[in-house]
Image 1 (cartoon, rainbow, N blue to C red):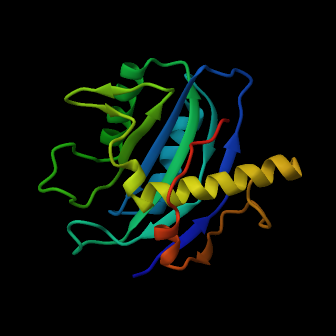
Image 2 (tube, rainbow, N blue to C red):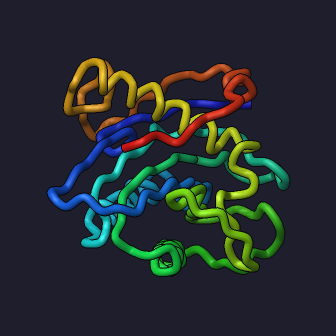
Amino acid sequence: MMREILTNRFFPSLFKKRLDFSNRVVLGLGSNLKNPLKILKNCFLYFKNHSKIGKIFSSPIYINPPFGYTKQPNFYNATIILKTSLSLRHFFALVFYIERRFGRARKRDFKDAPRTLDIDIIAFNQVILRQNDLTLPHPKWSERDSVLVPLALQQILFNHQKQKSQSSLAVGMNATNSWYHIPIHSYLAQEVCKVTPLEI
């Protein structure tokens, strides 16, 4: 099973605006149709350029095998932590809008079907919610290496950033348009047992 980390100028990246909003959101992104790298990049840029979103911190991209229905392309996953002035429901509506903009249909042909873009709200502040269309924190985030591994990498990069006080999170790499391929041992996904989303 191929598991791999990709990095470039957008993943990982830390972008700050002058305005700092109060609502803190952790997102999981996934894509395995069309051009996943381009889709994730454009999704990041959409959040970055949105007037109601301030600070945004992205993980490297984690390539990993599909689960459930396995006869489909590998998934490209990343996590994003951001600050927003939008309420939970308005942010939830924004997520739906972005998914549709990138060609995602919420009604899938079957469970775990391939998708152009999947955005899961992992956490919104400290909200605990159980509703038909939304559960927070995300009920399965701690069981998915597609979330745990990017969050763990963000933790490492965040700690490195604090220690080195550098403006770039691309550790040991230049921010270019090229993708860096970093092999990852398959056991890493199983070793990451608990991750606390960062305070940004």
